Image (cartoon, rainbow, N blue to C red; front, top):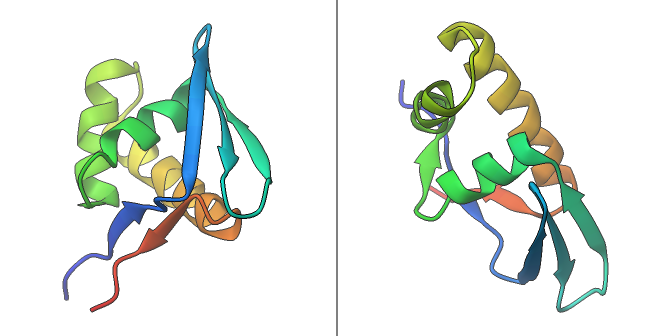
Amino acid sequence: MSETIWRRDDHWVGSEIEDSLVMINVNTGFYVALNSTAYAVWNALDAPASASEIASKLVELFDVPPDECRAAVVRLLQKMQTLNVAQPVAA
């Protein structure tokens, strides 16, 4: 069974402030601030990717075991989906 592929929601614009990203949804006016980890996930979604692909990029940036990183990425992607920041790609 293949892994879910995720993509950014295209309705967000943002600005980097120190090591975080503050973004606003141009359709709703809702805003979020992404910490350095969420910002790294956002950057990893510059092209659609699976949680495993994203985690492999983050392991290079952060000192975290691969399995722990993947679990954290999955949780973060679910939170991003709730906030309409990222969505699974329709099959």
